[in-house]
Image 1 (cartoon, rainbow, N blue to C red):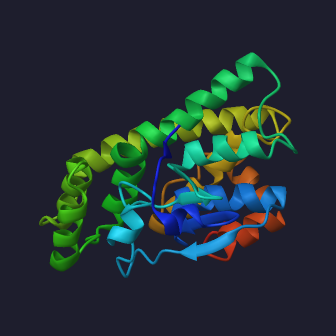
Image 2 (image 1 turned 60 degrees about the vertical axis):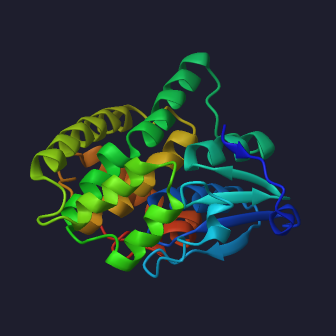
Image 3 (image 1 turned 45 degrees about the vertical axis):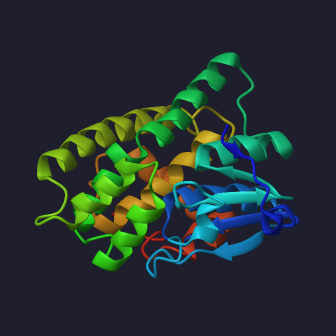
Length: 257
């Protein structure tokens, strides 16, 4: 788990749960949703990605890649959304969002791992590719290159969004194929249970429901996944979904049919 050591006195003196997040970030939605579902108070640190407010030395002292979300818990830094979820679940175990069985926990681990390994090559590739807008300006790109000395792959990703034509169509289609497989699997699971891993809400649900909010912006073909859409409709009735996602992302309270 990436708990980041620090000797920065400003960070060490932060009391309570301090969430650094952005409204449209699906990874940020996960943490807001977890906290609001469990009724846990948190201190709001909005990082305006559109205004490139993450590209500062101060924020890179918290998140080494300059991404959102990041959590500072009484001076302890945790970053990467799946790891933040696991950290918070351990600290606030009730109500439990962890499956009761070893098999269920293994399934959860696989789903959370995809949010790590698949975030840039699949999730962001599809979302940014279909949005087809540069994520950086030449000025902010220079700032990113200076700050991202140890993460050239992030620099390369944003350079690709700025290239003529944006992200290559074959990459977008390859990502879409993977995502369609994931949603087909989720749809099958939800045909048999109320929640992704059974009859209990788990971190798998917290991790995956934000994908609807993110992907509906660019017309992901959700229509074949009828059980998934019914699941989204159930989520939309929950106060935590409204506060953590609906109030932040245009279109996330709508359905494709």
